[in-house]
Length: 345
Image: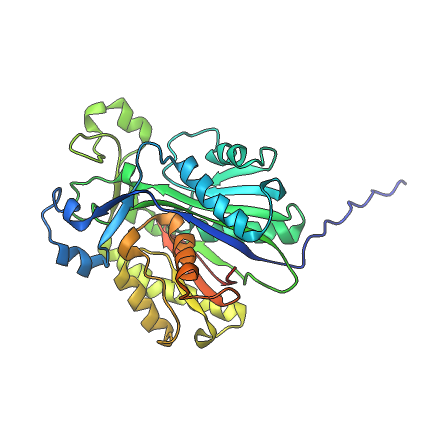
């Protein structure tokens, strides 16, 4: 009897790490004073409620693809590689409105790596963490040497500016990271998951096919004229979930990495709400000496882009240093989440 041949084992790098990070922030700054033209509120209320003073909204030329290319170019340059060395492109976004082809393919073509596997994922505000986990597995599994992970959003396109509960929250932007091989562990175990029983707490108002079948029902807007479905959020349950459940997930990521809070060089949570960040700091007993990302104040909630954008800013300002350990955690619509300890590029 002929023996069944054995498949040759695949070997990859022993470990992976983030080698470069880059971000793109749209030119247009939207201060709270402009938001107050659309909703009955106050600057103090918005700041107290969220910590946001302004946000960036993309213009006509600042598409999801173009913002991604700008952010990715910075990350590739910092990583010290060329675009043709990218072995895969992963893009997390919920605001690229063309169903197919994936925007990742357009980005890979513009960057100069058109033959790399390229695909989109939809994991909302946890998308960057999901992408990092996928990249880590691909590198250690031997299917790619360098993986480009991008989180990008144009949430202004999905914001109902007349909705008092969400009009002030969302912003636009792109953040990118190059993940590659490492001699030592640079990405801890990613603790990820979802609570699908609460999936409707953050959602699109209605499906695209339903909305466009009934044009008069389209209720999303970025101005006075209704355009298309918008984002809706049940704020109080989301706040409670994020504060109590995500602190546990963050601690699990620390434990999985064998790191204690006082050994961190930075805490970079998803920029959802300043009050959520403060509550997580307290729950984790994070020492005052550990710098915390507060990019939300000037950038708003950029969903999948928020962690890499905040990471880039902390490194640029010197709040965090290359080689430091950072705890990252993203959480959002789904309800999905992902947390890990990473070495900063």
